[in-house]
Length: 331
Image (cartoon, helix red, strand yellow):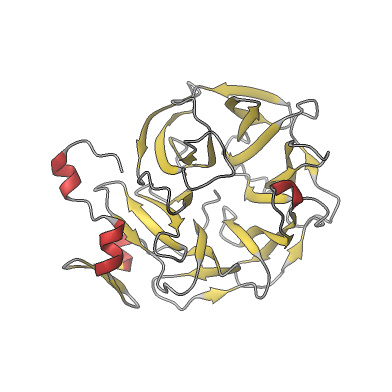
């Protein structure tokens, strides 16, 4: 983690030390000598993919498993908290182009499961628009048998085949949707050869507005904060996005009027022996949640921006928890 000075660094509990000393309970946890109630961290529900089953967690209620016996990834809450979208893998492959998966949606009470797309293609990482249109944005890889990725959207009541392409069909390289904005624009990244750029896409007009970035390195899995004044992302340090071990979690300021991202802060360590991935925000932007397999099993952690401490939210180290997302806050 980056630190401004040694005094600040002394306040940080390293995650390796934490894993040796923390004692988890039903309502709280012990970090060193300090008991921290889970409600002091968050009282908002969050969803995760627990052993690849979509599961909702709460500080006051038992976990609620929504899906069973499938390979379900990347849950994202609708803005009103009533639904979650995710993708279901039906086939894995050595490369992303060899995967097959479908975009799905389910009500937050576990009812109303629907497959929105077929599994004819690799369909990945859905999220929601934030402008009230209630569309699901997702990424489709290698539709043309090459390394192209394109962005689509669909409504939660639509049928298979109703998805609409919103990427520029003439762009022949890699385009990835990250987050929607309240004004209807979508934050997308593009990679063509060694070049990496970020844009705000206005779907109905096909307009791309380039964003000034604070680094030449690629990033991925970017999440725009609820106030749309910050972003969190995985910074890729070896210029090879499919390798996650070299990535670190960062956040930065986002000036949406100036189309500029600046003042990045790295919040996880440079550590090649494990993975730190998929950041997301809480409602008041005091926390960034992400998951890591540093303990040997993927667990969800919460980084507290105010003091730079990191707390484990997962309550069972024997279950794999990934891709956490807070209720009503689409990634």
